[in-house]
Length: 281
Image: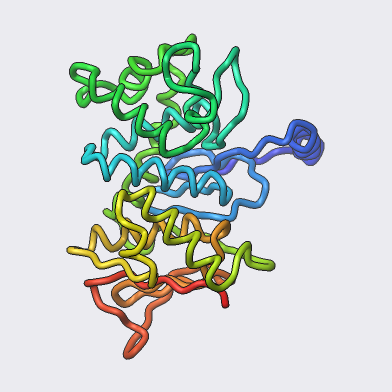
């Protein structure tokens, strides 16, 4: 259901958000509540719906990619995403409680690494998964309990409220949902041409642990549909910062200004063996 608010209350919320610069994650599930938001750029639909801004979406995709690359099960990705949602709202913060920084608010003084290292989303995600894997029985724990074993937060039950959102994101970003990540990119592209292609290939290579030369032509070979949608969704999630214009996989195509996955036929279809990306020229 949606919660109706009086106009005065809405104005108060908007003023408060503008003053402190917050962005709310929004979600909708059967019987759930739609939270207030400020123009989300990305929508994820996979047995539920979550909306994020472009920065949050890119960070979520990186967290998921690192987990898949480390051969962690989807449950680990759910725990990692719930932790980052609670700790930073999926934003790579340069400050926090005491010396906490980054997506997971990890602390240099507690041995997580230097501030510079922790503010690398890939490094931070790697460290989280390494710590989670050491937790005995984490796979059978509630999301909040597994997260707390790693984080040791003063609010041990806070992570559970993000479990539903994290499950939606994980289903999409691990490739179990088709055409599930849609981001609209408007205005002038961040990059064009060779610079855009290089940024996209390098980011992809770092997140997925492959040689950047293998994706220099922005064609990613895949073994199955799940892998194809993992890559396709990752590309869309990183579109705004890289100058990505178009992604094609199987019989679907996503374009930046429209932001939607649309069916394609004939020569536009690329089949299930490769994901093809195109940048703005």
